[in-house]
Length: 138
Image 1 (cartoon, rainbow, N blue to C red):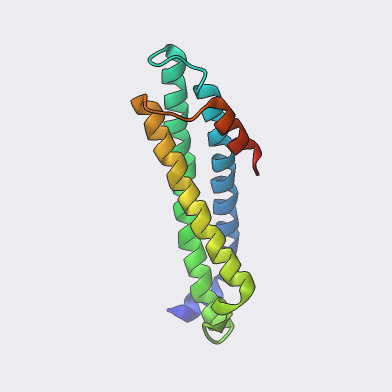
Image 2 (cartoon, rainbow, N blue to C red; image 1 turned 135 degrees about the horizontal axis):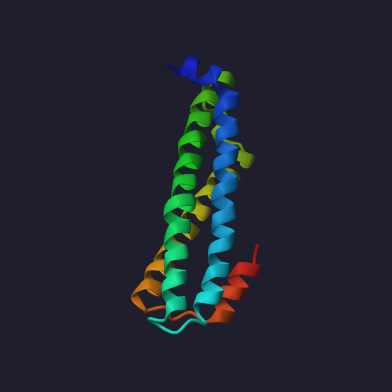
């Protein structure tokens, strides 16, 4: 089984890269929507439009892209274990840094998802300035 995975390494890598690009694009765009959403009055047509946009962005692009990133990333790790002859590379600084980055991005994804629920419930307490700074950070 692992040999079969290793023989498809380039396929996993390509799909992983596509997943990462889609995931990052969505997570960079969502805070921008929040900047504009903070200006909308609760219950207004604009508020409902932003809620729809945010839900669709998360459910159609960001969530599936994160899942694909994780799935193909795990397949790459399994394939690499065969190609490199073991698991030692997981302890190398570049890989540890990458894994920490993925955990951070997954946490950020959770934070943005929670913020979307707060906007939908009308309980958002963060200002336009907060979301603008968050959007400009990357």
